[in-house]
Length: 104
Image 1 (cartoon, rainbow, N blue to C red):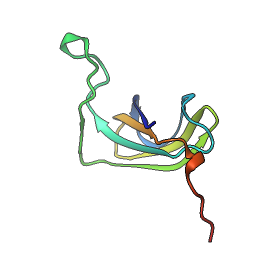
Image 2: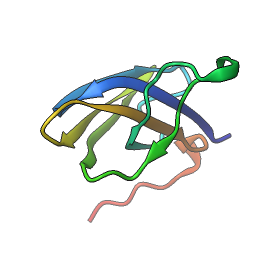
Image 3: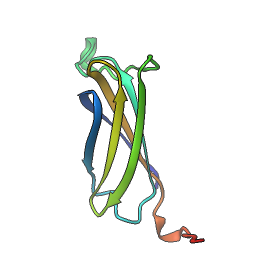
């Protein structure tokens, strides 16, 4: 079963190594990670988390995604002159035990 979580990591600038602990992930998992600029991670009226993501002028990149038993480590780079509010979305696809690995 595919699973997803959204993680407000706070403000980032430059390159940051992040680590998400999640028992849904193992070293064979197929994991996709995206990052985007967002509004403040505070709560809005009604107590909902403000997770409004948007396309600003800064470049956000995700690199070196490495799942392990119990989580995933990865790097996020924010190319901007000041720290920016950042959300990371992590998607774990179906169990990788049914997938093929090809080597050339």
